[in-house]
Image (cartoon, rainbow, N blue to C red; front, side, top):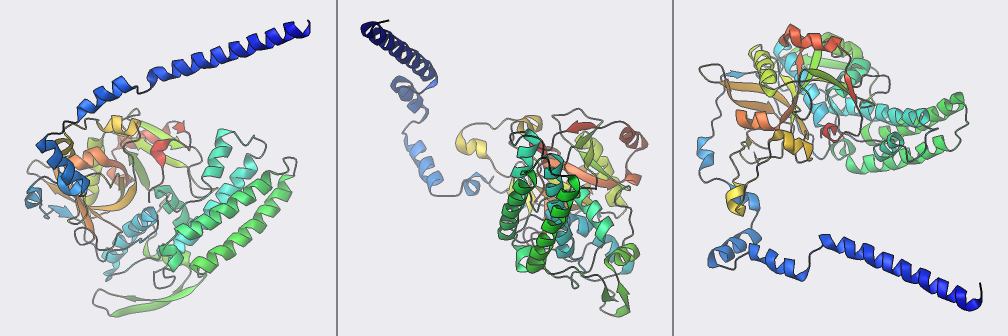
Length: 469
């Protein structure tokens, strides 16, 4: 081929590439907004006096304030037919520890009732310390277990994206307390970092990722060598946590006071002996997690792979049930003066000032001239709704036929809401409640029988199972 022929061939090739690129570009434009379409789209807004007034109102105000149904607060009712007594409101402040506050609040409610205590609290900081150490070990051991897989493997990617957080769920409560016990709040009080976890968590996550890369650096390294190095890493992490949270007590002295403030006795305890004396519940075997997830088959048991707080602990396991079935067990527990671990999508239709959760509170549709018509299943499928916060379910108001009208939870946001509590209508409960943990004695035998079957295993990155904060 001479020079002229080669030149012509290159021109032809270039022309073909340009034509091909132009074709692809033109094809992409079929989904774009052209000028004619833009003019038609603009017809959606009519510059009428009514539209201008609405535009002025919305552009200068909080949408929620404008969408409140007029006079709806007048119908608020704070009476409950069945309520578990409670003393003292906790405050997780700027941390994602609602799951831990909720679990400990369930435990302390039993202590207060059984031992006639006053406003008593268990130390969230103590169990949070061990939770963070265990989660660091969970990540590091997970990296060791998957070190021969490529970085782009889905599980490896998930591990590096989620090395540590301060969110969680009830399995974390049961594994943590069973292993490390509990202590009164006065024995290991809160610190700035326990109340404001973001900076500490960011630095520790950054270090964990660095450690993770080191553990993967030599895929031929012997497991014994990696375990020894992991232990050195955990020693650094322990020091890091002590600097931020304080060092957990091995033994302590505590005086028990009754509700009138009179001292009852003074004894020495370890965290485990304190737990065994004052709580003693079999957290691992006596509780069942129930879920209402309409995107998956009901009356099935599901397990979330690798979704746990402790490497040698239990994965998240739950029974998926219709919401009406879960409500029956919740009512039975409340009637027996037993609070429950409860989680929901708390941000939806929340009147934060009055502490009400009501699907009719905000009328967004009338304000925006549309309808928001997805049901619970559709909201979960599209990521529009999911469990975001754990609280302690403590009260129900039943009508004359025994049907629930509304529910009450003890929250961990200080005195926000109705004296530190939130009240939800039963309609809201049905739409935005996701998880409830109940003692087995309140669960029908045929439901417990489901636990004997093999669970359906779901991946840890399933979007439905983000940790509660």
